[in-house]
Picture 1 (tube, rainbow, N blue to C red):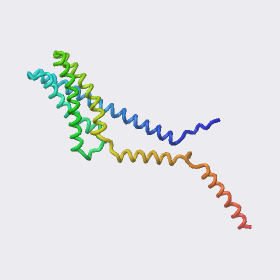
Picture 2 (cartoon, one colour):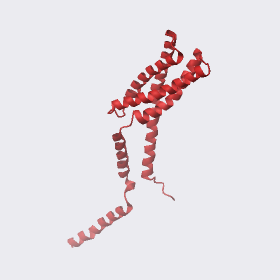
Picture 3 (cartoon, one colour):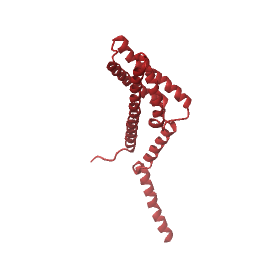
Picture 4 (cartoon, one colour):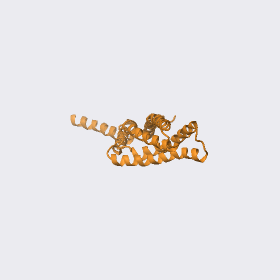
Length: 199
C-alpha cells in the first residue's frame, strides 16, 4: 500500500495559498463596502449639483467624482487598508491622487462620449452612463490602489514566511530516518559497555 503521509512542504504551500486567497477575499469585500458607499456619494452629489445649478453634465460629474475620491481615501486608508504601510504618507497621497485622476478621466470619459458623442443627455441616461463609467474606473482603481498606493508591509510578509518555515521544521515527519536510526544505534551500543564495567 502507498504511503498516505502528505509532504510537509506541499501542506505548507497549500496553507500559504489558502491564506492569500482568504486575505484577497476580505480585501475585495472591504474595498467593495467603501466603493459602494463612495458610489452613493458620487451619484448623490452628481444629481444634487445638476438639480441646484446649471452646470453641464460632465462638469457636474467631475465635481461629484472629486468629492467621492476624498470620501474613498478616508475609507480605504482607515478601513480597507488600515494594516498597510503608513510610513510614506506623502508618496501615498501623491500616488492616490495620480491614479484617482486617471480613474476620473475613465469615469467621466464614458459619460462624455455618451452625452456629446451619441446625444444621450437625458437625466436617466446620464445616471446610467455615470454608473457605467464608475464601474469601469473602479476596476482600474482596485488594481492600482492595492498595487501601488496601499502597499503591503514587507516585514509582515517576512514574518509570515518565517513562521511557515518554522512550522514545517518542527513537524516530526521531517526528521531524517537515517538520523533516527543512527541515534537508536548509538543508544544500543552504550548498554554493553556499562555491563562490562560492572562485571
